[in-house]
Image (cartoon, rainbow, N blue to C red; front, top):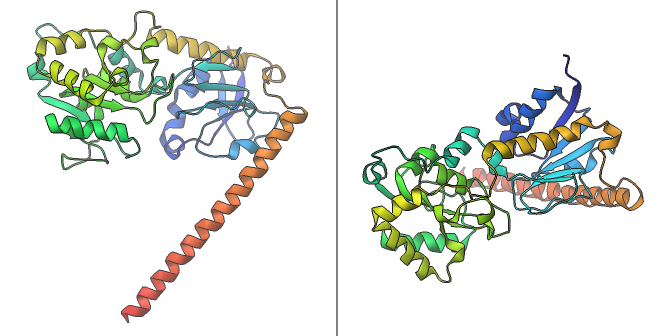
Length: 340
């Protein structure tokens, strides 16, 4: 049976997405399963993310679907549908489907089954190292403090760009985590529902995550499979708990044998199927019936106002970049003259 043709476009995503991810991303895989998909500028359906403002100029005739990988609440005045982290219901316009669900499904299944330890599995052999840490930015004082306090007890191996103490940058995070008994994985901020790939990666590698971030992490993940740093009243209490577990291989194995997911949480395959159903429901409607955002009066004025504001901000940013570039050129010319 011939598949119906659908025209889609992706805007305001990170640069790597266009270079290497777009063709194999989960959204495209699902759509290609059901439709003949054309990625083009003259699209009827536009997927957009948080890395730009070009979505404000998308024609009204397009159905706009927002996908966030960051801790940002969808703006339903700007989109018809949204994919996000928030625990909320909004008819058929929203689905909670965290960004880690777009990662490699094999990794997700490793996380889901990490508690099924092989027979005669020896933690002292499999996990010779204490704790892994891998971040690229400094913008979490609580995370930084925890790293330094743990290092006062035992060296935490930092393999990322920030606070690197192993002499090289790690490319394979899963392999790096897999030799460690613990993994320090703090989100960039604490917000209900905002759980990212950091926790999933740590669990998949069979570490004991020292996790801080989503206060409601237990709605999906089994809190017995981790050390929930958010629940401790003080840094001293957290460090003491890590020490207590670290000195007992039996306690470590007890935690590692705990399933990653909460007993009441859906399986990974169930979540993937739920997302597929939600996405296909959008595309199965006639285009004129799939619109959800307000396109009349105040809804239209809101979009036009935001587009003008963003256009003005963009022009200002371009002027500032031009000034910086001219300043660099001028300084370079002065240095060349002074060297003669």
